[in-house]
Length: 375
Image 1 (cartoon, one colour):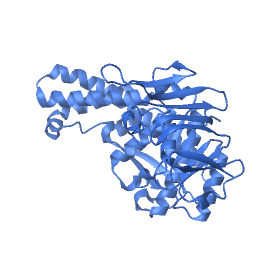
Image 2: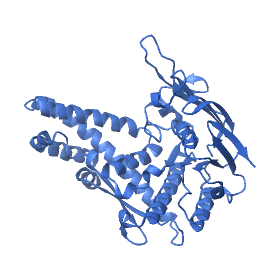
Image 3: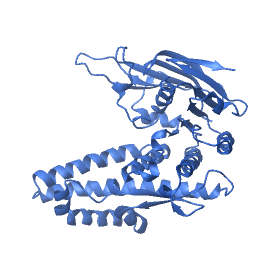
Image 4: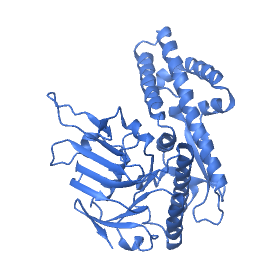
């Protein structure tokens, strides 16, 4: 189990300095709203590829009354590895470099942390996922993919750059056929790779859900599918044939895309379709409680998938997870978390929500940048 044994913060968010030793499998951070609970989860999330659970700029994470630099480091309890991330001091031009270190040695990027630590999370911002936009579900899906395939970030970023280049060419010099042919070839290769990575993750996640399905569980199983023109091509054709077909679609769509000001076909237009398995209805039609329970079940299944595919039991970050669960679902959640074999970090405002945590759990009171262990 990849577990954090020690967490050190320096000038991060509301924390001037923090040195916290952890021994439990389940860690509950308790405190009033604004006390700094989620800041701890965000600090941990920086060891995953991407921008963390708040999707914030690094400069926004530095303590407001600090120097503008910050540091977050963890020591893993299983192998003793020390990982560090942060924002360095300003240079002569006022620029700050993102820092990533492993055992004191500079790493190329946060991608290198994936050899030591995998992280999944669930925040209140996702509560409206099933009724929200397709874009919200794509970002959620890409986070699922990243946890099992860290290289997905590089492919996705390269695709975004290529799409922006195509949009500029269509707007400024639409007659440049050779330029468009070249950029569309790149988009086709990257787009099929992104779509294939999503499809593989969804298929594997669906298999995990089927294998661990428990119809008596208060967390209903989800049925998953991908919807989009490119997703259909990837599902039906070999990769090279899918690239050729996608490239032909891009060429045909040039006038329409120029009028729209964006590329309308591709991974950027896909959607993750989720259904409430037991009721066989779209997830968005379920009650608020049903949607929350479905989302929790999906995240727990994803944690199992990450462990199975990477060989690393992930760190699971659950922000305000128990606040709206009835006692039966809360008890089932704690039981399910124990069975995951992962280290779990949870937050909540009400201490009573965490009175029934299993043996070996730790509870901490968080207040104004300070953390104290509770008996």
